[in-house]
Amino acid sequence: MSDTFAAAWLIARKDLAIEFRTRSAFLAAVVFALLGLVIFYYAWDPTAVAAIDLAPGVLWVIFTFSGILGLNRSFAIESADHAIDGLLASPISRESIFLGKALANLVFIAAVQLIAIPALAIFYNLPLQHIALPLLGLAFLAAIGLVAVGTLFSAMAVNTRLAELLLPMLALPFFVPIVMSAAQATSKLLSGRPLSEAAAWIKLLVAFDLVFVVACALAYPFTVED
Amino acid sequence: MSSATGTQLLEVVGLGRAFGATRAVANVSFSLRAGECLALFGPNGAGKTTLLRVLAGLLKPSAGSASLSGVPLPGGALLRSRIGLVSHQTMLYEALSARENVSFAARLYGIRDSARVESALQRMSMLERADTQVRSLSRGMQQRVSIARAMVHAPQLVLADEPYNGLDDSGARSLTALLRELTAAGTAVIIVTHNLVEGLSLATHAAVMKAGSFVRFDTRDSVDSASYADTYRQAVASSV
Image (cartoon, rainbow over all chains, first blue to last red):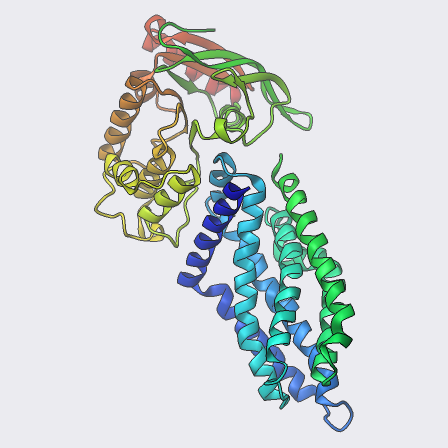
């Protein structure tokens, strides 16, 4: 088991080193998130909908779609020179490849969230200071589920001709329960309700995370078998 | 189809691999002992790469079996750690340097000794460019790094698919010297090449593959280069 996590960490470090050097997906995701905020902001009529009611939906739509930009790249870097063959021919387990990719994607999405959440607070004038920690925790929990599903479908889609189109088509239906739970819990937090009122949604989110992480890690080896 | 010296390392019996109705490899049998080298020739589409991918554990056989040191392929982690693969593609990350690529490969095989990485790069004369990003290297230099990557864990069996592609004279000499060193140290090598001279100079065995099957399998000593060239040309000509 420790070998699996050591190999996963090795792969995650490699992926993050590549992303740190190229910054292509991260910059694209951050720009996408900020542009999304701007578009929602100018399409918003504050006299019709309160910021607190709109913000959770905006936040999770932005995270979902900007995350897909990074997820698309996750296995694309392995297919350029068939580097994936080097991983598959090595003694590491298939599960460790999945976990490594998922870990790198988690860091990627968390980094986008760290920029997008304060930006959301500025655009919609939201007082986040007293709920910053629970909101970050919630965002992290949701990112785990998104990353598990997205990493699996990224592996499935990468060898198809329409990978960029196929990934969102495959992944978005599975994102729905995660985004729904996260948006509902975010709404409770933003409207100043006690954390206990969001607990049911958070528990649901944790349950989805557990199911998706385990199911996707177990399913991944089948995506690379011939 | 078998051979002479060293302990039995690789045994392939009736191996086949089909993609749907297409039989890419059919009924291939041979064995190699430690320190032996099989040069595999054949026209494009003969099934050479598929055979190597099956032996590397990247494809499952549809028929027959293969074993390395008595362990059936495709095996687990221990078996995969004994195989080195040089592919058509470099299997490198272009945003990483040559050293980082080889070091990453070494760590995949549980090797943390940086001296092994340096040694592998040095053997392919890549130490001076070790810190250059792969995307900035020429195709030939990328191939050298790819070979260093495949050899860094000192595999028992090397599967080299057209390893001379893109190499200049110096790189080709380094590779030939490396393969000779490896076979002398007991590593078995299967090399796919279209260059008869290079292939036969290294080989203890030679085979010509066509339409997924071996049409010839000989020990090097029994091969007359001229007649072998004729067989090869006929195989290529009849496949066009």
